[in-house]
Length: 568
Image (cartoon, one colour):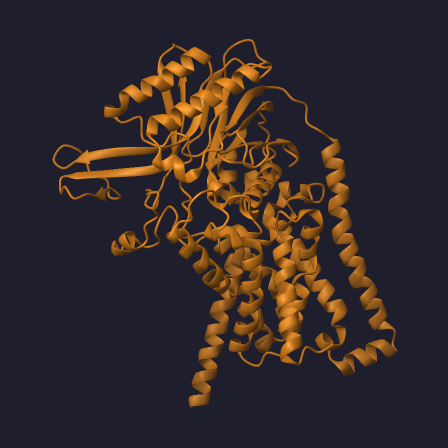
């Protein structure tokens, strides 16, 4: 079964890319199972590379197919209403450029294989791959959407162990199973025909293969055993809060072209209907990302802010909503922050954030609000990489809805809501975090909020740009991992769907249909115990990143030494 011909190699590479692609939502638990053997065809196709460029062309094909299958939706082809030119360009660029990032662990593996041997490379592969996944979740070009751990979000019983290891422990398990299956199938190639013949004559080859399959079975069974026990040992519910999440289903393009007050008024109407239909009184209304489309906390928007408080007073229900936040500065009057943006007026500066705000009345009856500024901005969609160093990029990349140049948030702000819960007889304080859109896919980022005291994870987003494609369903399922890692309920409010309640075991308790105007109301436990992962963080991924960097340095030194030796 040597993939010597180009057609055979091409089949292996495309097959690997397809298997990886269907491993991600929305293909369900069977699709996710493909991840446990999807890398085997790729490893077979890389067996006879003679140069790094061979690994490049082969690996790129596999990763390109993966990107097409799993993230075809990024260009907004299936979005509601108009299709934005810039969004299409971004989608096409992702299809062709992102595989170059995904290639990095493949190239490192191939370099290791040719320099140190196949077995050494296979041992190093999990370290290299996980180190890359962690690195790819940092910096201006961070996009951890296709990390291996995201393939198992339907397999909730199996993944309960990530409360100890975090999601990177799940990636490690997937990689180890792939490697063991590859060794099982390619025993002769890996150990050499002569060694294999001797081992076969002595009965060792059969024994080794039995051990390999046994190891795979054990690695797959133990998580199911632990998960079954863990889920059956449900926590007792103490304090809780009733949340109503609103899904207005407003066309995302119309949302920015309609009058600002018209959008807010529609949210008021939808909220009144939801509160009226709910059997229980809600302690909090959760609105989606930019449900209010303009910064109402500016002095000249006081009338609009007063309308929000009038609504809260009439319904008795505070609001946590997505909203732009803005601060303005005048030269000679205000201290100008370093990240303030310039305007045509040389004396006028401003900062603007994609943010979440909670509006409420404090215990003394005074109107108050808390705010959080989004820190993880979507590359090109919300922030142009390196635009501070090259301002011309901001003019070149401009999304027509005008949300491509937010400032970065800089703090982990926890919302603290005073309320009278069902399990207490005096005013209590519910502590929660609000992940805005893309932020919910970062394990360590969400973990930091829980470590700082968040008892509930809320996610507010607007996925309507991508219509009823795989994108909104992937985003929804990825929140399952955050729930299990931290043992917290997740409440999602999404403009067009899917909104949902996810319990601390990653189970979808309630969820809405995509493309409907609706709401959900539920009693959400306020949990305080912290998992091992919440306390320790990515103790698997960070050493892998360091080790991978060390391997790169060693390889470069050896490569330079070889070049110098040849020259001499």
